[in-house]
Amino acid sequence: MHNFSDTVARRTPARRLDLNAILGISTPSSEVMLNKAGLTNTMELLRHEAMVTSITIPHALARLQNTRHWGIKQLRLAHRMIFEPIYDWAGEIRTVDIQKQGRRFADKDRIEFLVENAFRKFYSVHSQQRNLTDNLRRMSTQQISCAFANLYNDLNLVPPFREGNGRTIKTILTAMVRQADLIPIPDHNAAMM
Image (tube, rainbow, N blue to C red; front, side, top):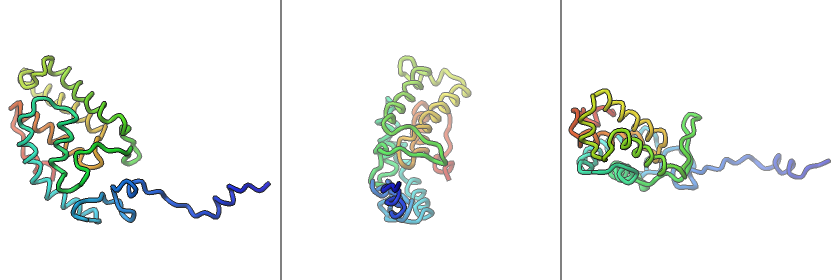
């Protein structure tokens, strides 16, 4: 018996649907994220990001110093301040599911819940009255390191943005630690290069 769908499948060349190109995230011929500089080479974009973020991260840290409550809103603000000169979508939560090296990250529809939950967990364990600075100052260096490592891990497992998650999370955590005036922090940009 002849199956029409088998014939069509054999005659129709396989086409790869490039969701990133459809969503305007990358060009059809490249995996490089669409960017304001129009760069299409990965290494050129990485160098451009490094140059720009070496300027924007310190500015973001300065603007975040007076933040009293940390959550998804502040994470988005930090991402926008750091990456707005590079990407039109800076500060926007990703709208697609992503994976890296075969590992799928948090579902796009759960990002806001997971980020807020990570901060809630951090606050509930380390700051009953949300007076984070006083509570952190009562903790040992090891407890502080563990608290921030857990928050970093929880946020990093989500990741909320298409690009720049690690730098954004590190910027937020650096601002939190500096705000509490706990321990000296080395220059953020030097540590990232």
